[in-house]
Image: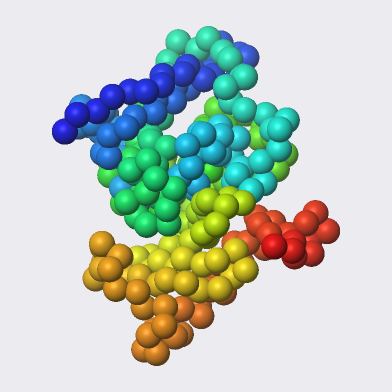
Length: 252
C-alpha cells in the first residue's frame, strides 16, 4: 500500500503560546499508517460528514455540515498560534474519493495524536464524523467555541472515557445535484434516504459489509427501517437540514 500526504497545514487554535498547535494532515491512504497509529487514538468508525472534495475539509475546519455552511464561518485555519507541543489530526476527505453514500466513500481514516495527553488506543466504540473534530479540539484547548457549531464535543470521551457515547452518525452528499442523499448509521444499521426523507436503502453492516443486500423494502425489517427513518428525521431537524431559518421545510 502506498500513501501520500496531500496537505500538511499547521493550524493552532489559540493566540496564547501556552496552548498546543494543531496540525491537520490529509492523506489519500484508506488506513492510518501503522507508525502513526502506534502513537495515537485511532477511530475505526470515523465518517466524512460529506465526502465531496473541499466540502469535507470545510466541515472539519468549521464544525458545521456543508448544507449549513456560511461564507463567514470562522475556520481554525485562521487561528494561528505558537505552542511548543502539537496535537496532530490525520484523516482523509473520503474513503475512495467519490461522493456516494456507500461505506467505501464515507468511511474514512481518523487518528489524533497528542503526546503525553492522549493514551494511544483503538476507540472502536465511537461513531465519529469530521464535524466532531473542531468542537473536540476547542474543548481540549479551553477555547470558547464559535456560535453555530453542529459537531459534538467528544473530548472527555476520548481522553477519559467520561460522557455519553454517541449512538449514531449522520452524513450528506451530492448537495444540489441529482442523486442527493443523506444517511444515518446507528450501531451497525445504516439507512440511506432522499432529502425528502424517503427511505431508499437499508443495510446491516455486520452481515453485509459490502452493502449488497438492500433491506429497505423487506417486510421483516420494516420496524428497523421506520425507526432509522425517525432517527434521520431527528438529525435533520436538529441540523436544520432541509429547513429554512424559521423551521419550515424548504421546497425542492
